[in-house]
Image (cartoon, rainbow, N blue to C red; front, side, top):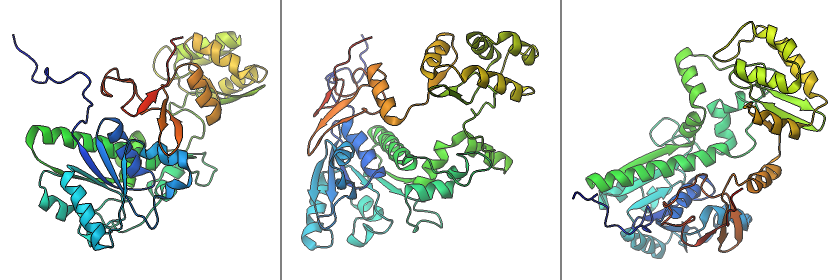
Length: 379
């Protein structure tokens, strides 16, 4: 009988068991990357400057959310004693993550070239604003600045608006997730080949990935996508946000079938059907888009957004009452749409896990070691 080569591994073995990460990162992107690695079983040793500390310490629950499960050591790399201690930790590591400004660690001897020379099989993940190879390598940046540089602020909003920043550090977060994915891929390749890797993750590159279809379109056509505000990217007159008597409702009636189902719930099918001109497939064409929008808007004006959300989803029309984040978090928990973890460390904080469920990935538990998953009651 043939056995799988890994069949002897214990079923509760953590995915990144045995991986040791030396973490020279701070604020969001780097710590979020290494938080993913720690949650998947890696041993992460975070090096923190004792003179300044991580600026995220200003909010203990946010700092814990990014750094839970890590060993945190205070080291002043400007001193010989600090450098000696850092080299001792480096001897244990097989991954180094660095989101300091390019060149900061180099002056202390911890640049990628020096580290890879000492350990050719080392995986080094550098995170920066614009990458470490191009003409902008030395430029400093923050999330909102990269949003502007990448074109993101001129995608949000409508044609008449000025630049509109995404209302949360979207680029920081996706940069951290991209860095974690690249590092895990490099770990897998090293398992297969014994070879290390130098990874260069930029916030600008991550932003381009986040806008992927629009980025591709701009590369092919040489023109910027039209700003559409709250209209869905399909351009359908039924893919928009409408005002109800008690709030706003976002609709996704993209196809003729969905538009007819929407019209049925709103009791305007007799008026809507002739405007579709026999369309039966694809996204709705917008020849009579303004008429359809006016009909839908008038019908929804006196309706309850929450009641419409329920009724429309029941007939396969995507719809959502426009919630603020606190309302959304509460709804997600009430309806078992996420599996929260409780982190207990310098602060006790509830977090939304890693954004995905896995039956056995976290060492055979519903959450990694050192974390407790909230009990989930099936609806």
